[in-house]
Length: 279
Image (cartoon, rainbow, N blue to C red; front, side, top):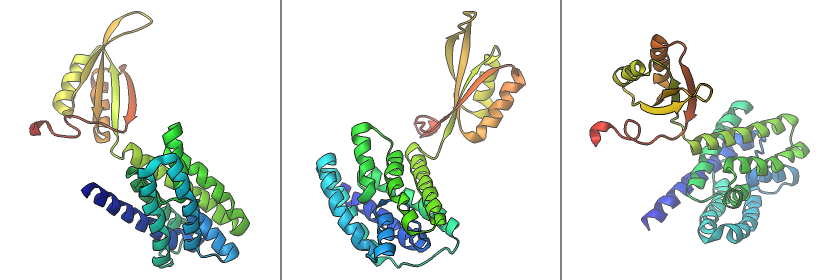
């Protein structure tokens, strides 16, 4: 029960954010950035339909698809968002918070991405085109951000029939920002650098890293394929702010050292997810 209450709270928060994005940031500038919300804006402008009713009818169809392909739990989670979204779309005032179209689009799209990520992390959605990406992820292991980009792209093309060319390009950029935001949330914002170092001065470099930068070092035995020479390769994981200091240390002892640097998105263990003093 507690788990369901927490999940419901997160879903409601996400739906409120989505409603604010549509009615206060994207809608006032005719930015139909995909989804049933975008379709609602288009049909409202073209035929005078109420956007909340378009979303409600569309979500009724989507719920049937969700029940067939995603199972009961996702169906019920989707049902909550699908029902709440048109309700909050009808409640949240349709006002312009930011007069500049570009700035309003950027803010709205970023918040949109955050809201959708909250829903996805709780195995839920707001219905509409948010459901097909869940199906693509479950059955084809496709990244939800990519799936959302594809499905929303279809809706955005309809902008050319109703709104200006500027609104069309703003909608495309909006989808990109939303997908970018979702991808960064999914892969993590606190990224680290993983550095591999091959040097004849590896002992000096290791001592300096351990005692000056205060980062752990893993020594990996390696063999060069060309000369079949055995050498020690250092593996160091560290924060971005420590990377320049590491470069200084390596250059201090061996300017010809071979280095490979990767960006890693998830690091767990001593020194990163907990302090050694807490063990």
